Length: 94
Image 1 (cartoon, rainbow, N blue to C red):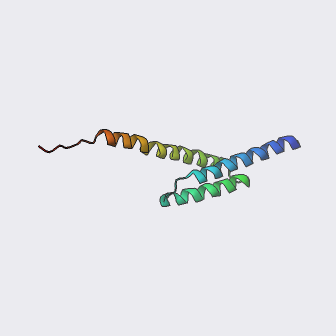
Image 2 (image 1 turned 90 degrees about the vertical axis):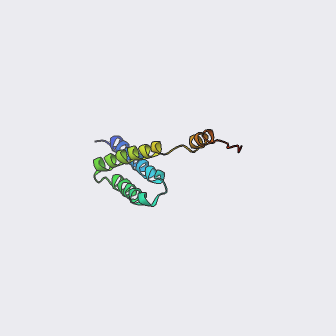
Image 3 (image 1 turned 135 degrees about the vertical axis):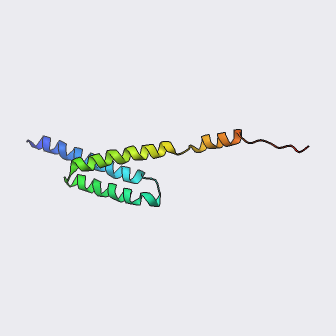
């Protein structure tokens, strides 16, 4: 392996480690997800140090997918307000 190839791999490792760390910062501010954030930061560090890269990458992909599903499950504030405004009825007493 030449120096260029080793440098490319090292650069790719740093990029993936940074993506895992970035995902940790994207975890919603919810006390129930604090351990997820901590695990992502640990996975990022592990990935950067070259330990269990396949496990860290699979963990990243699983958590990213979970966060996307969580985001889809949340009602959008604008749509929720529109739906609420459309269902209000004005009661006029007789």
